[in-house]
Length: 279
Image (tube, rainbow, N blue to C red):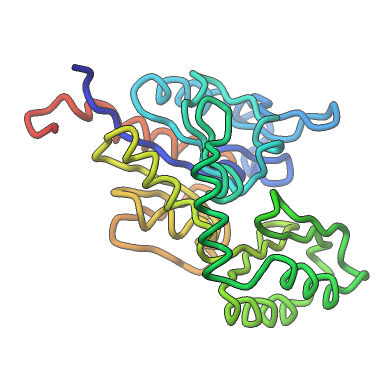
């Protein structure tokens, strides 16, 4: 009988992988870490991790069930080329799609759609509100993701803070939540969660230890569902000084935070299932 493995569910953007703008390389150039490009978009490099982080992720894939857990659409996720073994499971669209060997589980997606239809305002209502209230002066793109949620791409320096606050109140009354991440404002149904999909993967793998990491408001439920979790020193959760009993707030920011998170994952996963109390 094979030994049980920990389940490691981690957000990707600004948690494990970083755009050039998010790297936060504050050290002298000569001391900057070597970087590995893990995403190319329109023939241009887009996302990176340190080479050390890449080696840690490869090690993690051998000793744990590593489950990328992202708000990205399936198409956006599939252009990422992570090092290490291909994950058996991945969670996309904030839990709307559970990929099994790269293919969305239709039963899972159907159950999610049914829950959204019964528990929150419809996507069309939210999309129409965003289109009616967003100012062209700072709005750059409006997108609907997987027919599940909506997001805006904005000029952050021109975006009025009051508009975001008002949107959050409006959305709250309709069963939706708002998250500001870099140049994107997400409007996501509250029942659409990463944690629900992670619990399903934990059930399928039979694990009794779930580890998690994330940086944004949309990762809070994931972290609360984990037995142990980590958040970097940047992002929405850090800005709000958010924490919980099983969560470690790391001081590292930028791409070095991703490296630290992977060190913690490997350390916590190593030897799990081999001790006398393993089940």
